[in-house]
Image: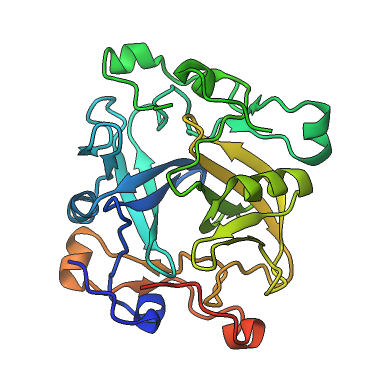
Length: 155
Length: 155
């Protein structure tokens, strides 16, 4: 499914899929909601996860905390159906536009998007450096949805 | 500017900025055009790049090929003014909404977005696996804009 990376010109301007996986064997994937256009999450795919995503049309990621490929939604029901999958200029990042099943949420903490806090910048930050929540309320209760599945966040 | 990561709860639900930099000292940053909502690029920030971005309100990244912090637009004129900066649940990814100066492009190859090619999936891929270009035409000529600045793409 993947072609070798033979020249910068072919990688940037060609029609061959030649993804670059990093030292851990992973490629970054930005996932957006195709309806709202909102960025939902930044995940990682291994070769196997990318193959499965392309073959099945459902988002598969590699969990760095659990060290395995997972189909998004297997625990939570919040499956992501892939509508459009894009790759960037040097083919080391993916952009995936999805339809999210169920309540439309994608964040394990319970929010729509993983990006639910704003960092104040410039003068606003000098006045008060606290993060500001941009989602007033969670969409779901993670305890109800995930039960005792280990939290993927690591310190 | 950055607080220590003391608990998963504080990292996920707190108001302290505690970004997680990886083994290379970098954090991923998804950059979108605040007007169109389009994802422009996926870049990386070092601690210094993130500090400068927060302090100045202009996007600074860490170039992995040149091994240094750069202010986006210093070579091309295509500066990115930060309108909103968000951080994700486990604070290992940023989402930055920007106004792009000049022609609005952000990709060194000459396109608006770095994500100018689509990977066909499922049955469409089985019929023809070639990448499809979703931007018909470049916005600028990279040779004119960058001259002999080395191409950041690496094989």
